[in-house]
Amino acid sequence: MSPNIPLHHIFTAVPGRYDLINHIITWGLDWWWRRRAAEECLRSQPARVLDLACGTGDLGLNIAQLAPNSLAVLGLDYSRPMLEIAAGKAKTLAGQNISFIHGDAANLPFPDGSFDCVGISFAFRNLTYRNPLAPHHLAEVRRVLNPGGRYVIVESSQPESKLIRGLFHLYLRWFVYPIGHLLSGNKRAYHYLAQSAARFYTAEEVKAMLLRAGFREVHYHPLLFGAAAIHVAIK
Ligand SMILES: C[S@@+](CC[C@H](N)C(=O)[O-])C[C@H]1O[C@@H](n2cnc3c(N)ncnc32)[C@H](O)[C@@H]1O
Image 1 (spheres, rainbow, N blue to C red):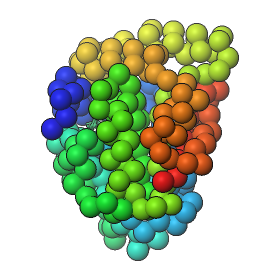
Image 2: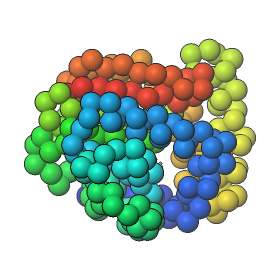
Image 3: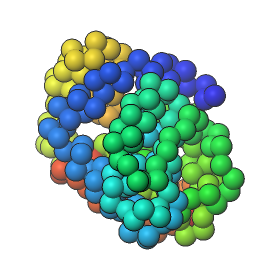
């Protein structure tokens, strides 16, 4: 188990209205951003995809919906309440090859080279920002990818324009935090979200981190003036 216990508490406490709050604080854009990331995951026609830190499962479910039936999608998360919601959603997707397991990103329960693609939506920040296990989390993803496999990340980012960045940080502080707190009843969770998103790395810093971890052909697409980004890295 990861030593990052407070974060684990946050993600076991928050699930009830987790999806609804995400849609409200992003004005529904989170759905499109995961969809874009799912398309990016499928670009290299993978046979096995891991949705890492899958939460309530939406990235993996998008991939399964868009993909041919032969594709196997596995979601992994260390929050059991999140996984219960994900499994409930998967029941409505009859015929798709998707399943969810409990596990820790720091110690992935798979042999080397198990996946053609690892996708992660809105959890890369949790695994890397001020996280002493960040290099280890990246090494684990590399280990479970096949050579040539893709790591696709959709995550909050930092707008390049100083003005837009300032507005984005105000939005996090004065809308995301209070609305998240109000609707979830969990002050700590949305304080953490607003603060870590405001202080998170720029897209160029994430790119440098991925290159340092041994990935190649690292590139990214900014979303909504850079408030979020999709990063792609190849093993
Ligand atoms: C902000 S949520 C994102 C969930 C989902 N991917 C989405 O798009 O909504 C972050 C998720 O990362 C999971 N998580 C954080 N650290 C983890 C770790 N070390 N191992 C497994 N899951 C982890 C949390 O339990 C939570 O479900």
